[in-house]
Image (cartoon, rainbow over all chains, first blue to last red; front, side, top):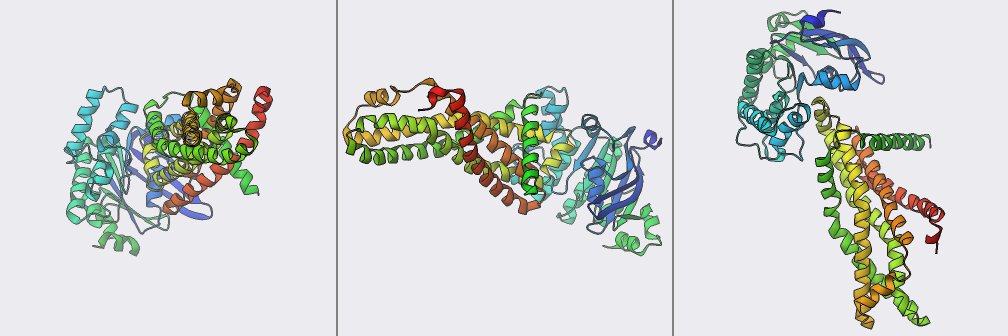
Length: 247
Length: 253
């Protein structure tokens, strides 16, 4: 397998089951640096599992997953830690540590995983928080943040280590159209300015149309369509056409 | 029955992993300090109030019996032995299992349900070492200290109760309480609470950290943490008393 040499992420014929329940069957796709891939599909079709497989919170039953040059499915935990530093994960509900302030949430990975001095950590945290529009909220606890602010804070934490691959699980869920659009804008900027590879699981077709260079459509764990938005719109598969055209 | 053995095996491996990880870098000093405050200082009011009340009530009860035999002078001795050997360690263990065990179980289960633990892992941070080990270490370190606070609160409650009946002076009360006391009566029962603390931390963290049932698992983890920790503390108490008598024969009265 040499795809990992040229692509930021390669998901190669991956299958995953939980007991007798098949979640993913033989799913393949790839994403390059500075590209965005959106994963669409109805609820329970394995979209979030795909993201957790990509960051190795779950292991696939079969198939291979490449993050740049690293094949991660057989990796030891110590090596996985190195690979995860290249990745950021925006969780659906942000998953901020509720016992830490916003500042501490962002400073934690910097203090533990880099050689930065406390002053340098301050600078990076301030810069990232300003980038997502939360520069004046760093002393707040996660419980004091609104839904949109939590998403931004989750995104800030995902970006704080300057990842080469950013995974986002439903970045616009539960948000109004304007706030969702702001989050999409931040993701777009990350993609174009930092050439970060984006993989976004979403139900928001507007967001997907805006962000995606290519789209993967999953249905009952199977990949039923894969291509640009225009290609999916003309797909032979009715479910895929419906999902991309729903508003 | 197989399920019980399976859980017992998993909990044992969980505790062993925590013990080994506690000796590995990074030592998570800040997290341990935070948990010590949570487990230790926030439990102090409960422990002091309980110890004081138990001490006062125990003196009232023993006084009415001992007065029949004209042996009221041994009340401080009885009180000290009762608290340092058994009441202090056991009651502190049960109180902490209730207050802290449920908290640890619920917090970790909630962190699992809200993907905070996945969040930590996604940042290349070992969530077990970051979340579980400090809680177990804090429980292990805090229990002996809380036990001593309970012991002395019990003696204070006993003294005030006795003083209200006989006007016994504090100096004489302390002299009588500790005149027959030996270090072998003090250290082993106090240090056995480290085992209680390790048990509370391990059981509670296990049920919280390994739950996979979403919001429903939070309540279940809290309940299981308290019930099983309390039961194990009582069983371990019996076992450890036998061990103490074997290792320190002088402490067997």
